[in-house]
Length: 147
Image 1 (cartoon, rainbow, N blue to C red):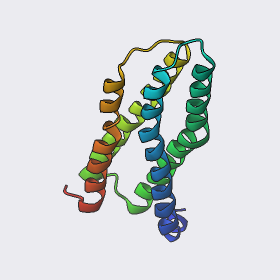
Image 2 (cartoon, rainbow, N blue to C red; image 1 turned 180 degrees about the vertical axis):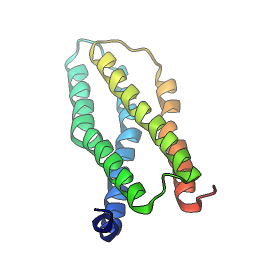
Image 3 (cartoon, one colour; image 1 turned 45 degrees about the vertical axis):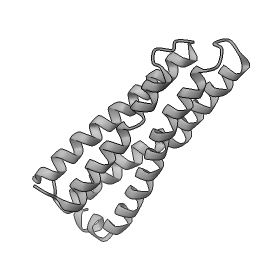
Image 4 (cartoon, rainbow, N blue to C red; image 1 turned 135 degrees about the vertical axis):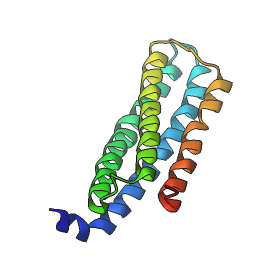
């Protein structure tokens, strides 16, 4: 099994990077959609349109992408024998945080669909920086492997 994964390593890596890009695009886009969504009246037709757009982004792009990212990332870690390396532990911690952020976005989407607007547009714009900061840290860990 490990030999098969080793032969497929470059394919695993390519797929992992591709789906990370898809997932990150969704993580950047969804809070921006929330900003516009919050500006619409709760029971308006526009509210339903924004809810549908957000739902499609999460179901069609983000949910499959996060699943594939985790599967391929763990397969690469097994192939590389990296589970004893500190940089991977740090990376996994950051990816868990990013996954938690994804889950929080899904919950906020459901709250918006119910008409609850708990955050301001400014707060959502600031939250939009979370995936960028975590992405930078993750890339540094993967490329430099500092520990």
